[in-house]
Image (tube, rainbow, N blue to C red; front, side):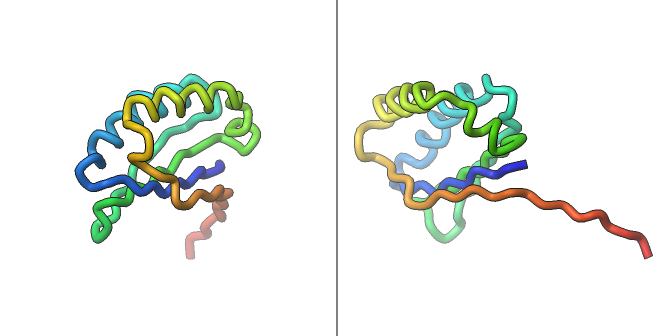
Length: 105
């Protein structure tokens, strides 16, 4: 599994709207692709203007199979609904999930 990790800065007053619009627009668009496994929204308790998205993909190939045109069109719709300049991705990373077998002693 691959994790797409995004940290977004959005004003505290727009945070809930941002999260709802993200679910309505982004999650709906990504869920159409077979490699999409789910998405979590993490809220930082001491930074009300920060939202972290943890998106699970079956593999890097599955994640990268989402066409660039789809990503661009989805971002355009999202930006139109949220308003220009109301949020900013401040950090992004990709992680490979590793699991190890546990032995019972």
